[in-house]
Structures are given as C-alpha cells and as structure tokens.
Amino acid sequence: MQTSKLYLLLCLVAVMTSAQNERNTSNVSSKKTELTKPKLTVSPSETVWEGDDVTLSCKSESKQLEQTKLIYTFYREKEPRSQIILQENKILSIQQSHAGMYWCMVEAKERTAERKESDKVQVTVNESPMATLTPSNTYVYIGDRVKLDCKIDGSFTGWKYRWYKRDKKARDEHFEKFTENTYKFEAVTESDSGVYLCSAYKADSPHFSKNSSAVTVTVEGRTAKLEMKAERTDGKIFEGDQVSLQCQVIGNPVGWTYELYKTTDKNQYETKAESTFTISSASLSHRGEYWCKAVKGTLYFSSSPVPLQVSESPMATLTPSNPYVYIGDKVKLDCKIDGSFTGWKYRWYKRDKKARDEHFEKFTENTYKFEAVTRSDSGVYLCSAYKADSPHFSKNSSAVTV
Ligand SMILES: *[C@@H]1O[C@H](CO)[C@@H](O)[C@H](O)[C@H]1NC(C)=O
Ligand SMILES: *[C@@H]1O[C@H](CO)[C@@H](O)[C@H](O)[C@H]1NC(C)=O
Ligand SMILES: *[C@@H]1O[C@H](CO)[C@@H](O)[C@H](O)[C@H]1NC(C)=O
Ligand SMILES: *[C@@H]1O[C@H](CO)[C@@H](O)[C@H](O)[C@H]1NC(C)=O
Image (cartoon, rainbow, N blue to C red; front, side):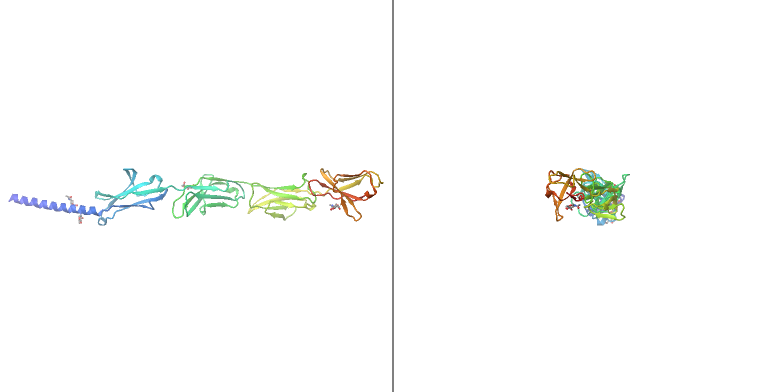
C-alpha cells in the first residue's frame, strides 16, 4: 500500500511536470514566431549631408508582445566582420567617418536568446559643398562699386547665402537680413574696408556649405585736383584762347559728376558727367579762381582753388623806318608785339582803295623790307602777330601810311 501510494504520487508529479513543460515549450515557440525581423530606418534619409543630425529607428512587428519590453541595439560595421555598438540611436552632426553599413537587432527583455537582426542599410554622408567668394575687385577707392559673389560648387538650387564681415577682434558679424548670392556696394566708403566671407545653406534644411575663404577689400581715400590746361606751350592764356579745366580724381572713377565753381561766384559754374570743363574762348571776365567738386551720391571731394589768368591780346605796333619816301628809297616796316614773346609769326596786310586788306600770305617775318620803293608801294600797311602753335592773334597794329 505504501509503495502503491508513493508510485501514484510520483506519477502525478511526473504528469504535472510534463504538462508544465509542455505549456512552457508551447509558450516559447509561440513567442518566437511573434518577434519578426526588424527594419532599420534612417532619417532624414540614407544619404545625408555632413553636419546633419541623423536618427536611426528599428521596428519589429510583435503584436502579441505588447506587454513585453523589446530591446533594440544598433550596430555599425567597422570593418568587414567587426562591428561597433552605438550608444544612442542619434548621430549629431554626422561626419564622413560615420558613413557605412548600419543595422539593428531586437530582443525581448527576458529572452535575449531570441534576437533578430535587420538587413544592413548603407548610410552615405555627402561632403558639404565649398563656398567660394569672388570679389569684383579688392583694391578700390571711395565711391567705387564693388560686387562680392558667393558660389557653391555643384549644381544646387534653392540655396541661400550667409554673409559675414570680420572685425578687428576676428569676430564675424553676420549680415542677417541679407541672403542673396551677390553682395553689392554701389559706392564704398572707407568703413567698408575689411574681411568678408560667406557660406550657403539650403533654404529648407539646416544644412550649410563650408565657409568660403576670407577676402580682404581695401578702400582707399580719394582727392580731387583741378588742373588747368591752356593750348599754348608756354602756359600763358590770352583772350580768345581755349582753356580746359579738368577735375582730376584718382583711381578710374565711375559714376561721378563734377561741379566747377568760381570763388567769386556764389553759384556753381557748371555741372557735368565728364571731368573736363572747356572755355572755348577765354575773355578777361573769365579771370578768377576756380575749384571743382567730384560728387557721387552723398560723397564728394573738393579741389583746392586754382587761378585762371587771362592776358589781353598783345598789341602789335607797326613802325616804318621813314614815313615819307621817294621812289627808289629803301624802306623797312617793323612789326612788334608788346611783352616778351618768342616763336611768334607775323601777318602783313596792305589796304586797298576799297579798304580791303590784302594779306601777304607768304611773308611771316617781323620786318617787311622794300629795297627800292616804287609808286605802287604807296599805301596803307598793317600787321598782326600770332603764335606759331596757336590760332590766336595779337591785336592788329594801327594802319600806317607809306
Ligand atoms: C515553466 O514556466 C514557469 C513560469 O514561467 C517557470 O517558473 C518554470 O521554471 C518553467 N519550467 C520549465 C521546465 O521551463
Ligand atoms: C504562456 O502563455 C500563456 C497563454 O499564451 C500566457 O498567459 C502566459 O503568460 C505565458 N507565460 C509566459 C511566462 O509568458
Ligand atoms: C563659418 O563662419 C561663421 C562665422 O565665423 C561661423 O559661425 C561658422 O561656424 C563657420 N562655419 C563653418 C562650417 O566653419
Ligand atoms: C586784323 O586785320 C585783318 C585784316 O583786315 C582782319 O581780317 C582781322 O580780323 C583783324 N584782326 C583783329 C583782331 O581785329
């Protein structure tokens, strides 16, 4: 009886154990089928820009395990057949060294033996494009126009631009309101001198290009100088001469206008787009001091005053060697201009009965000689003088009767 009782008990325990075993086994096998192969997703995309923040997510369809904690692990292939485990599923400011194969693994908390791995996903990291800053010119003068062009290599559309000016403490001031690819100065001032750099960013992403290298723009000061030019080689200016007044501004000025002033006049004399003012026939009333102003927008430079001296035409004087002569006499007519002039030539005229003056065109000396006068040489003579290299004449001498 004792023996049979014990046997029964043993049997019962065996049956119970086996049942529990079966239940456990069935539980495990049913769970194995529930943990599906996970899928790795890379956002914003499997191809990203250097500097982007990248998030990895891993998902397994395991409906009946909702109450069970699933553990995900992310891997990156280091070299073929070696791997590193990522501490986080986020990569902040991804670099090119982060490019490679990624995958994930899922496991249920209590049964780590049941792990499932995703397929491997290639993550590509594009290098940031390079920005290049090209200035229209780097050495300019006040008032010049300067254009800075920022370009990124590659064919990108929809990018915006950031502009910086570096101060003396090497801090870059960002021109926040300006996002075009060309930065223009219509008229630079000295304070625009400095170091500029730019970068570009895609309008709908936080992604930036590399910064351009820094470009130095130097703005030089300007001065105006009024230069007076007369047509005579000796620099003297006589009535009737042409005089040009040039307002000279250094450095190839573009877009400036020029104003000419006479110091005795309150009003400005003339304004022009060209820097040269011409007085085509100087008169005594043009005498005075002149100065000029070069103007561009609100910028201007004034010259110092320069005197304009206009001399009266020199007077010619005709002097006959002897006013009353007889046929056969030797007669000399001398033409002289007052003042000390060199290189002048002379014009000679004989006045006929109708008061018309006949010009002795071939004769330009200052002395007109008759070796032996005839009756037909009787008459009225006059002379004038002119400088060989100019079209202007002295005043005519008074008429002299021989
Ligand atoms: C069966 O499952 C129960 C409860 O989960 C556990 O305590 C027991 O150890 C398991 N038995 C076997 C043989 O795995
Ligand atoms: C075994 O499976 C049953 C029914 O599916 C469930 O109620 C029970 O919680 C499971 N046991 C374990 C340890 O998961
Ligand atoms: C570009 O320059 C700006 C201004 O100095 C700076 O804030 C930024 O970090 C730089 N960007 C890169 C990618 O070096
Ligand atoms: C001088 O006389 C000539 C001849 O009559 C005349 O053609 C010319 O205009 C005169 N010049 C001046 C400055 O009066």
